[in-house]
Length: 143
Image 1: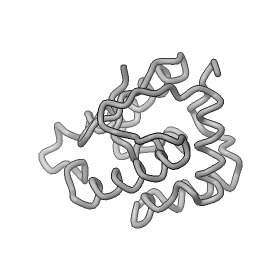
Image 2 (image 1 turned 135 degrees about the vertical axis):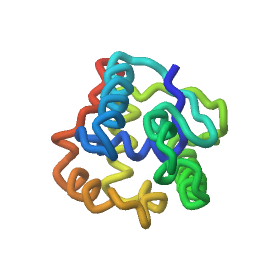
Image 3 (image 1 turned 45 degrees about the vertical axis):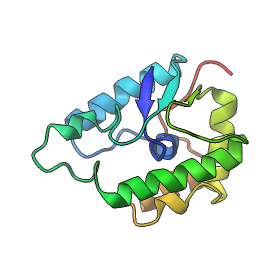
């Protein structure tokens, strides 16, 4: 089971192998490989499996900041609207092809972007979405 905070469901949509450090990218790649193989996601509160490589740093860039917690709340609300059910802590879901297609369509047309405001990666994600998510690493095998 891959543990994710809500806003990372958005970040995964545009992940192309870039990140805060080589260790962070390596961890992200392992998570994407597991998701591509069909492993489920469990929604958690606070730092998750993607954050893990950053947590060992003396001053974690943002994993505990109020702004990131707010980003999680916005993402959870918008994704819940899209999937038609609450995205509560402990919620489990699969990021299969069908779900990914729905998330990416909503991301591209702006329905899942309020959590992205003030994110330093937002401009890159805009470019990736405008390019049809062509370079992304998340490509589930099923669904």
